[in-house]
Image (cartoon, rainbow, N blue to C red; front, side, top):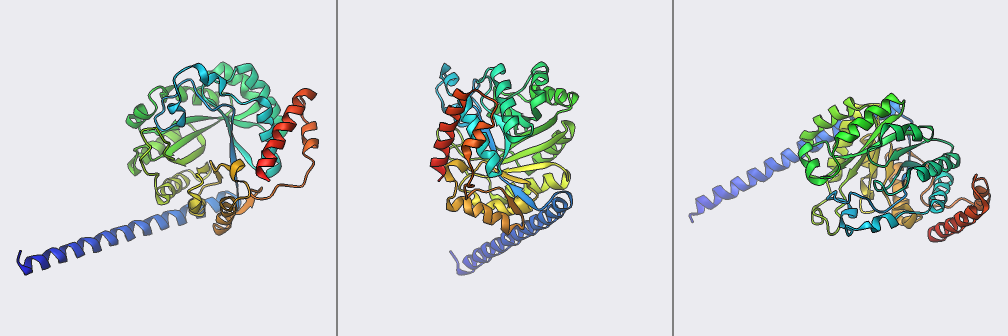
Length: 357
């Protein structure tokens, strides 16, 4: 190969590298401007506070179990899913923790068809009495009659939409079509309830899909959205797939905030994504979730979440690091349940506190 040809190739490579760097810098500047706009909108519409939201799960399994990103899809297809249900005493204990540590309940959820309707009503009633307010409910598409029964105890419903790209949705959630959720959203509004949804980034969508998301939010009167970055689960088809970057998650949150100034946005972050909290708050997120707080309470990672909030110039409501010095038994005595149940709640709460101390 002639020396002049080698020089030309080398020059071309340098030019391409330079152009790539320039393009990357342009995109980063574009994102910075979008985040700056989103942050201004957030501060105009909301206070400078942020907080942790805990999803309160009543089961670890589901009758569907074929959403390809979900750990429940790795479970054997038998009827054992009916056994993977938490006791109501455990749920009451965790609710007391949430109340006294300043965590909000993001939603009350569990696998579809894993808890009887009557028992759910009883649990919802007690949870309301503990936290002093209604909660969001996320248990799959709910018929209107059941919604009417839940209505006294819930502020709204969450639809686990995951992605608004129809093709991707049919692939990743084959037994969970969107249509029944649309009907639920309509019924919810007719009953005076609020609508919320979940969105998982990294399932195969792109920024082009934001227009579909924008339209979906408008059409279904979505007032709250949980924006998660895919957490690849072992033994699923996404096991070797990388999570979306913090910039990508920030872009989506900022676009949602600038398009819908009043919407409640909750960021979902796993324990390996603490360093993106401040960026996502500046992008317009209201609150933080998904972090396994009962296992990591008081840890360096928990402390870093509070520091990340401070970095974003937000005051953190509640605590992820210090247990309050209160009479926990007194809190249990306030419950409108029988003494036998109270004793079980006490044991469950003691187990939590021991693990978190």
